[in-house]
Length: 221
Ligand code: ATP
Ligand code: MG
Image (tube, rainbow, N blue to C red; front, top):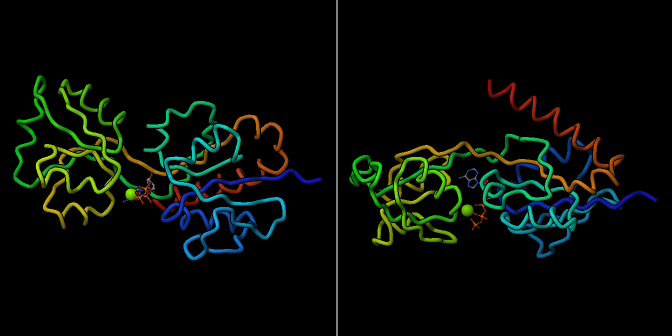
């Protein structure tokens, strides 16, 4: 009997940008998770299914083997710390940057000198803590779960650490990006035990993703 393969994805941009990769591997979802309420999506292969989970939960499903592999942003992987996960590929999808942003007119360069103290709101406490520790800036960290752009506007914080791609959301809220922390893209994460047990079904898919990733890279260069 063929091994059963479970792939963890999150709705939205990761799902959309993963579909062409899956298609290249001959895997097609039978339903659109944006239209269906189902969390387990069948594919054209009886033994391959997709599960739809929150972006931040992808590493957890893979770590415990509830999914054999998954696709997650580097932001999520840094915060999760990646225990038990094998990260064989940068897929170069869902590209964006982790940035520090402030209200327009806020004098960030003087407020972020070594020894200064800043109130920073973010969904990414580990990334923010490390960034400001490297600069020698003390921070009061405020953990948020979304809509971070609001926080500096209503006086919750001086700065936010958030993902930026076009910068339009910042602009629309009278904020500006003042520091680039790290480039972010989505990675394939693999359960180590599953890769050993299901090598015959998993490795060819990983190889196809790897080829496409090189093509993506060549297009970028
Ligand atoms: P929600 O926004 O509904 O609270 P979420 O933040 O968990 O959910 P997304 O905003 O879809 O989910 O982000 C999922 C992943 O996509 C992130 O972990 C990140 O790697 C990537 N991502 C987030 N924002 C952007 C962006 N502006 N451009 C490109 N990729 C992004
Ligand atoms: Mg989001």
